[in-house]
Length: 315
Image (cartoon, rainbow, N blue to C red; front, side, top):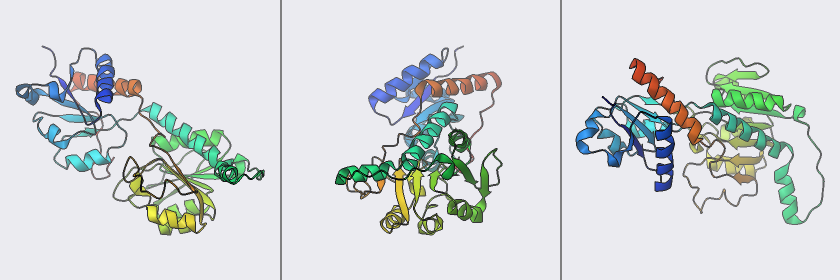
């Protein structure tokens, strides 16, 4: 007897939805991956697994036999909040390819700041020809906030490029070649010695608003901020004040409280802000589908749900 269908539940546009369906169906040969809309109501009770990307909670609530939910994204804070405490277990995407691309972005935008690209862009707008003093990587300290899979990959890439790397995490962690800090007091100490701060922490109740006026005052004067994590981790008004006061030199922002970033946002036109359209760690469909397929096969063989999100921590 063939296994029950796997429901694909998304709020993506039609083209993205079809692309995911094709890739997942290929990776999950022998399974029947079906968009929720195509599953007859009388068959929905048999669905044990849902693969999701920004799903409507009401759609998942209609799958009464659901055993677990596999997210196609690494970030699951919205999914946890919208589904609530009574929802089936959630499995997040843990993809080495995502770690690689995020580490690549961390290095790219660290170079952007180390080589004074914002200052040269400003000089170009004013028609100014003036070389700036060069800072070698070993004179630039980069602090990574978050030492999970993404932070560890970024630390290795930055260290290989010659930057001085330090890192902060909620609980103590040891990482070769990286000076590490933890806890509330450790965060201020970590920030104080960094020329560039890169946010890679998950969004949780503890990290919401983490980078605020108090934190910016703890940072080294003239330091720069990069946020690759989630928008609400940075208090935008406090960031703008720190930039306007010259406390911080520049901010590279890839994530925002509201996305797409509204046209009315002052971030668009601020001369010390670089706005990116959430591109630092794109999900690779082929790699993600292979990981989902491996998790589904293991479940079919053992009946054990893969490692799930801790709803208290939020990841």
